[in-house]
Image (tube, rainbow, N blue to C red):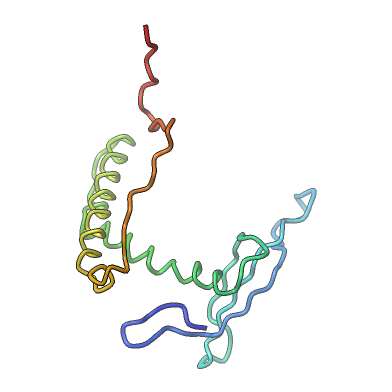
Length: 153
């Protein structure tokens, strides 16, 4: 199965998925753990499987979706590394949660801006196949930590 483009070719491997019940300290529980997916990657060039994932995705999830979510971790790790090194997320030296929260929010906003700027220059964006839209904000949304709405006279 192929899951994405690599630098030289499409990345591919063999995968299998089965529903299992994890067993961990079952003697302390009154009922068994719920079923989860066990996803196994076994590249054709290897003598045995190389990676395993447990997933709580619904039972009707297709194998292609399981593989896509499992392999999406690499993208998340790369983004996190870029946030820490290039945008200063790892440079915070304050002592308060609020200060760190503000710092992390600004780093994330800067990263979002850079992602949008990069897509403006991608071949897909120039061809008109890629369009980024802002998410709709629910009508009664109130940001966490904001003061409650005042009463009207």
